[in-house]
Image (tube, rainbow, N blue to C red; front, side, top):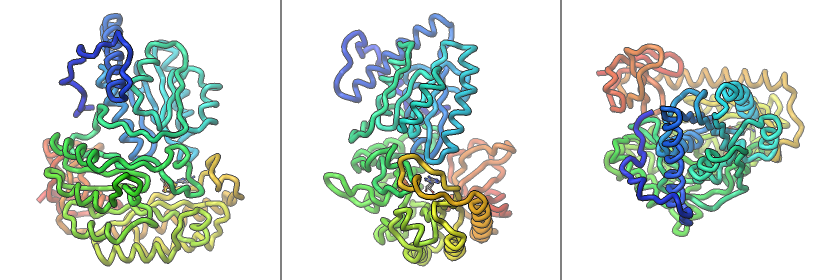
Length: 485
Ligand code: 5AD
Ligand code: SF4
């Protein structure tokens, strides 16, 4: 990984690690980074090489951003970052939104155990949403005793301190908090891409959809101050970032609880003014909070991308009510219609859950009806997964056979509408941000259109990070093949 905004300019010798750690949080964490650097030097002296570290991310964009923060601290501490899990320090940033995310972690832990047998000095750490679940931590302590460090989502800003403790200790370091109201700014970050970046604008969620574990593991909604967000984006622009993705579980309620309230639409207006930023994305919008002001700002903006992720979850008003989503089928249709009328080229994508307790094939017909009428550009379709502690977990499950059949029907409808929407651009010339060299063919670059569709085209690797004009020649379902013009 490159593009580290590590503290390379910092004079680490100025931090006296022989004394007590400072009380002020940011200085305290830098104190612990300095302590880790000392440990790394020691390791290098003994082993003739730097210790390696690997950050493995599971789950959503918010987690991906958190993982960049973990990587930034490891890099600042002097570790050599690698993608190889068989390293001296490995950390899994876990997700728990559906049970299969948990199962994947247990599976990988088995593999890590094998590595640790061959390298007993290896340190294994777990953090993120799954660690906020007492039952998961209990299971890990019982059956995966080789894990060295466990912490949760609320104290991730203390990673340097916990890392330092873990490096110095032979016993499990465990620190999981129930909640926090704290937001710590300005810790080091290691960005995955030099030209685009996620920015947290808020943390947590207050919606309590009845199937969702997020409000329990990420805590109550907290918005960052607009001036902190804008300062961070200005800094990113100065480093060459052209595209930003504003991140929150429910960005439409951004700023409501700040001392000086501000709307999400107003925040976007201010981000738009930042020089050097050419594209603005955001994620995720809750339909119940999407304002006319926001539609207006998107319409007038030349930087906000033509892509809106608007989770539907279900098209049945009865199920939506049981999900505690606080909108009806008709309200969703009306909102999507309004967006399409005001901004016809806006791609709308969604999330759909199939198999929520009590769902009948007729309810699924309603979901399919909404998919057809809105014509989603893409949709993530999930099978309902009961999460302990959520209201829906104690409701009667839908028979598995019915879930499978309904899931296949939903998926097929999504594919049909998506193909129709995406292929409508065939033959047009559009602007793409060249993001990387194509995984399968190094003569091609992979670019992303404003509407989030990918296009593969011949191009020089030096163009990665630039906005280029591409003709969309051949639609292959969800993506295009094309040429630069
Ligand atoms: N089961 C299945 N899907 C879920 N999601 C959230 N919780 C669950 C669950 N318990 C889906 C929703 C959400 C997306 C991030 O994950 O569709 O929008
Ligand atoms: Fe979960 Fe609903 Fe909050 Fe999204 S809005 S994180 S689905 S509770």
